[in-house]
Image (tube, rainbow, N blue to C red; front, side):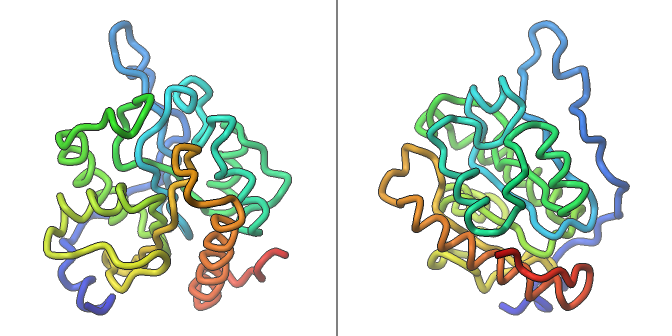
Length: 221
């Protein structure tokens, strides 16, 4: 299915303004579940989509915050983000504002392990994620791992199947989809070097797409 065909199938959704960068304080009321806030804005270049946050990520307010997670070393080495960007809430804010890179997860409930997730988590989270993608209109929706993407498709577009790693033929409206291995330390089958290779492919794909319109910046070395 082409992007144009997929765009015609996407329901019309009103555009929204930029999201606040801070999570609503109601999430921190006594007894409420604390979650990792989304970093979202309309017309993103890239939307990073994780499986679900670890307790460390929720506690620090930083995506991929586990000390053995390979995301930050790989994303810096690939040139996808500036090397000076710190793995902090302020760094995430800078990526959102200056680089137009957003962050979210298919499931917002924090668990120590992916094995603790239930089908109900994906059933509830996938439609919400679809709405975020439609509203943000990123050039690329970047899924970390087949589990995240497979469950997104299962509960939003069940007739579609996960393809190989990398750029998918399926589009969400005008948004392209890229799938790379989960950088979690639990996914040791994929080395840091392999992750960097996929992130570099994403970097150049993003440059090609952005160069046609919103952002003509040269790829970083």
